[in-house]
Every structure is written in C-alpha cells, then in structure tokens.
Image (tube, rainbow, N blue to C red):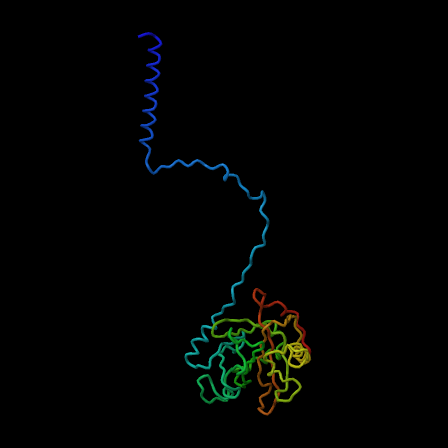
Length: 280
C-alpha cells in the first residue's frame, strides 16, 4: 500500500471513531434532561431604569370593642335589644332596647317588669343597623337618685374636667361597634311645641328651607350648649343625642341632652376634644 492510501485509511478510521463516540455520549444522557438555550430576545429587560414612586395604601381596621357581641347575647333574653351603650367612668354600660313607641320602657326594666327606673331605650323611629341607619339617633334614660340609667350624664355639667377626660360614647348595634365624640351638651324644654324639639331631628331635610335641616339643628344646639368644643362637624356625619331628665321632679320638663357625632374611619377619636370652653 502506498503512502497516500495509508493516510486516507487512517483519516476514515478517525472519523468513524469520532461519530461512534458522539453517539455513545448522546445515548448515555437521561431522557428527561432537556437542554434549554436562553432566548436572548426575551432576556433583555424592558422595565425603566427607575420605578415610579407610589404612595403606600393605608387601611384602617374597623373599631371593635365586643359590645355588639354582648348585645347579641342579650337579644336572646329580650328580643327588643338593638345594641349597647357604654361611657367610661360612669355606670352607663347597658344593653339598649327599642319598643314600638317611646312610652313602654319609661317604667319597664330590661326584663319587661314594672320599674320606675325604666331602661335605656332608643327612639322607636331610629336605627343603627346598615339597612336602616338614621342620620341622628336618640337614646333616652331616666335621671335616677340611685345613680342608675342616665344619671351620670349630668357629670358633664357638674365637673369641669369630666368632658375632656370622657369625651367618647361607645354605641354598638347588633352587628358593629361605633365611637361617637361629644361636641356639646345642653338644657332644653322637653315639651312639645317648645322652641327646640330636638327629638324630632332624626332625618335632616335637604330642602332649602332651614326647618329640620342639619344647619338649623346645629345652630340651635350652639345657642343652647353649655360648652364650646373643637370637634368639627360635617353633613355626612352620623349624630347621636342622649337625653335625660334634668331634675328629680317628674313635673319638670327640662331635659339634659348630650350631643355627639360618629368618629370617622381612620380619625383620631380624641381630635378636637381638648381646649373646650365652658359657657357658665
């Protein structure tokens, strides 16, 4: 064999060996091992170099004190139960009832037994549930010499620092708990036909005439209030009025009324309750 034929034969042998080697390596690779080649067209980021700044979203948890759960328990004892009321540093910590009129609980206790002290009750025209939430809710309770029911409301008049130490009224429905901040308290004639029938302001008129509007209601409160506070008031606020007899004589028509408005979501409950000024 000449030299040229030897070189061709060796080259062919090397080629065959190389093909055989590659085939062996491929046959040894696991069948589930797949080589992924990165797509350079999608590897390039299209995001801007600097992300725009966004303001953090602040959420506020609803006010919860558990009084609505207590109200639910008491509703099993008396189906007239509609909520609960509590004021710090007072005996006012009661389930609230509502009858079909404003006379029944004047001389009935929670168990519907006769009792001159009556019970704390909501005006039959009012409601604090989502499906029926009046713009102004009225609660009534006697001013008893024994100190029960709404007697302690008069502490706001008796003691100069009582308001700023206890400006919050906790009121609950059967499903939710609320806080109301007091913005005024006043003396009124509770006889029908008086100059300010505060008990008839439940839904405020949206008419241009001043009668029964929120503006008229707040104006009359401002005229009679025994205190000036820094609590701001808005048309979309929910309001609360707590009414009790002023004197021990049942023939005295004077009423002592504490006015409050609901604490708004996320609002500091004490905002506006400091720096109050007495008018007497």
